[in-house]
Image (cartoon, rainbow, N blue to C red; front, side):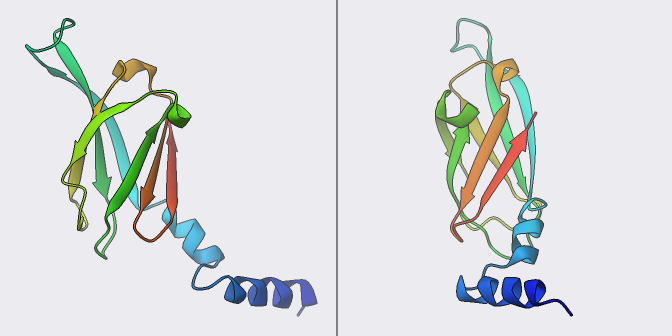
Length: 117
């Protein structure tokens, strides 16, 4: 058994409840889809929406959604509290859906999930 492994394990414990396993499983907690939906209230005739699907067994609340590293805005998002497995939240995009390259989601547990398109 190497001392590097033992040191890494104790470093993870000192940081609280986060460890390498938690960080790895964070990448599997959400599924993200972009879509266009017809809209009569826009000049283009459609509105861009982002669907975020929870893949968590535990209740999860989204605390923020960043589009393109804050270079694009959102118009709001709904149904983001107490998400269970299969729950969907919708984010209305402030830019055209085809320009979205990266979405970063923050949760109430302080963890971040980044999805690249």
